[in-house]
Length: 283
Length: 322
Image (cartoon, rainbow over all chains, first blue to last red; front, side, top):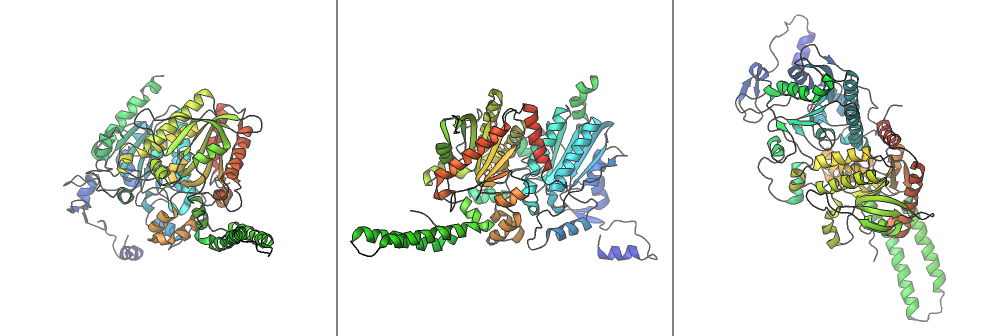
């Protein structure tokens, strides 16, 4: 929200606008000017070039889950455990991020259903400090899995992150084994763990829970990798191959099961759940 | 020829004088009491070494952890284990030389313990560093580790890992073959082990490439080793926008064994010989071997479920509010 709108809302006699802040938006890929309402109706996929725009948790949950889902509370964690400061204090960075975000950190869970099939869905929001995995993300992941185990339903995670949150140092690295412990709980309960990789998913997130799904789905053209492209280029000093680290490239190299367009995602998830839960439901 | 780190320069000067005196003594029959002078200087050098190493900054520790003469996997195998039987290959693509593993008998006073030992090898000279890819594992290396861990589980051998890597290899082929997936699966394999596992961070514990071999119920760390989510240079170039701020980044990220013990990330610190493991690799290896044997002793007799539970709760506890 711009400062102007903030001021406007505080003034009672100015009529509230019923049009959004930005009537028009530019596609990040083809630069086409898109009417926001059309863009939204198209699930934030560019109608011209099919670029799958980055979306936040609420938007994603609304697209994937049936109406009436329940947002799970965000677990509380020790804040700024290292008292970290670079050019800015970590606590200040967190404050800024929260001022612009509907949720307190980068991973939000909801319990609900997908075309009638029960599921707990976690969504990582790249808009919140690059979706980075710190203690809050790890703890939310574990809470989401625990809820799925309690409900006896699948856990579906939509990943989006630059990697670990450096400001939490080693404690962010520890989220790799911690989230893996949670996945083992799902496994022990015989429940499906489904990963949907969205743009971008890199670093420690990819090297832990983002690659451990029973079924691995990715959105078209999503950047997915372990090492950053600049780091790789600095190491090998060669040009990177065409389409390197994109969803289709990973599919071709056998790293994921399928690349699914956002408009088909809900149907596909429902169908995958049907197969993975068939035996359990028959029993 | 010892190579001195920047902050060891005062010591270098002292040691140079000692060796000069010794040469002089060998050459001519001088009447002056050189022995006394040498002894005096040697004591001074020892005191200086002790005082330098007592108050190393996190960035200085990073230099020690990366010291070219620091003992690596091969040195630990040579001095803390016997009868090493290397096992190779991931059965799918290649035999990665950055991650080595095999059967070995850990030296103990009562005849030794048979284990599966796995670790990063950085190499000790240009040729071997290239061969071992500077200790930067590729997917096939992590998959070899998984294979060996599973075999250890099947035959009831405890697993010991020696972690020493700046990070998993960042390259096109590594990405194509699933570096991220290999690391994730190796972490999972550690957590699944039905046998005791002790991990030791012996040099650098660099990010996911380290944690993939360190998700154990007991994590030890050599006194001057470092363990972090990203290299101080990497962190500095992202957050400070210049790699020159690496010393600040090392400080802020709390990379030292002492800090990590306090944060509950590691369980205990293995003291190094005076002036760092590189000054006495044999003693360093023996100290680590003993510490590992002690931990394995404490874990023996625990069943598979109990071990997995202990491992899981160890990690779940880290960073908790309680």
